[in-house]
Length: 302
Image (cartoon, rainbow, N blue to C red; front, side):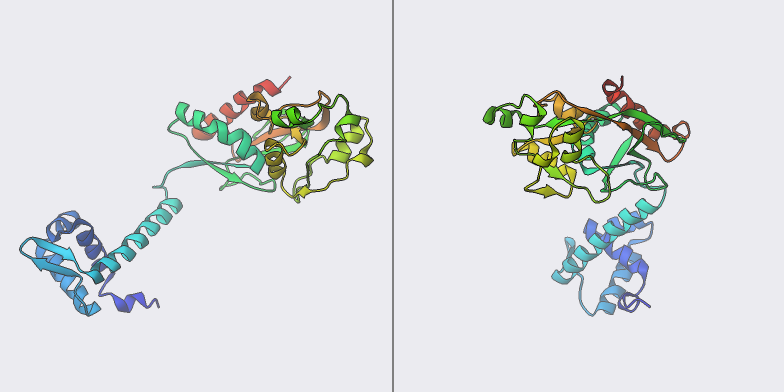
């Protein structure tokens, strides 16, 4: 049994105390709780007797919290707020979010820069973005996500977004400070930024260079980031050249935060797919998000 049960006369007394402390008025608390003012006064007296200390100072001007009352109110107010938030989250009364699970790079460089425009257009649809280092199956907690799968991937409630095309990217500042490569052979002599994700298979620099017809033995890394997002951040900071993916790098290239130092690219047999946990026709808010995402990425489709 919780020790709290023995420290208060009743749970009702906590609600009476919170209302009286917040309004600094027994009369206002009584009106809010739909009881009489004497009832509130009696409840507070019983609470003070149980605590062994005065919680309110009473005078002709009304009531004010004592130091003990203020300390208790701070705790009660915080606890009530946390309970309210949690109860709203697990009930049907809270804000309804459409949850989008995405890699940290997609969340940071594709979703984050554009979702505020989406919110302006659709203020009634609230989005919760969940960054994840692995693919998540859409379920009752995740409404929408993006996977990279073989191009012939086919399942209910999934949509082709764009082909997986991989190419070098760097910041404009990096190209200003270094001679621009004119071929893959020249490219590998630059500072290449490497990453190796634990749970997502991404093409590495040696694989890309070999497919592009270069000498992969020249791509030995000095530093390897365990998250592709960190590699992109290093590229944005002008530290070198990273690999870029068709969907993830779209917004960065469009805004010239990153550029392609050479035109060479590798188109794989895989593609990006948008997945939903249910038929969007049955969920209006989810359908709005799916339609928006596909419209925003349409320039990447042939």
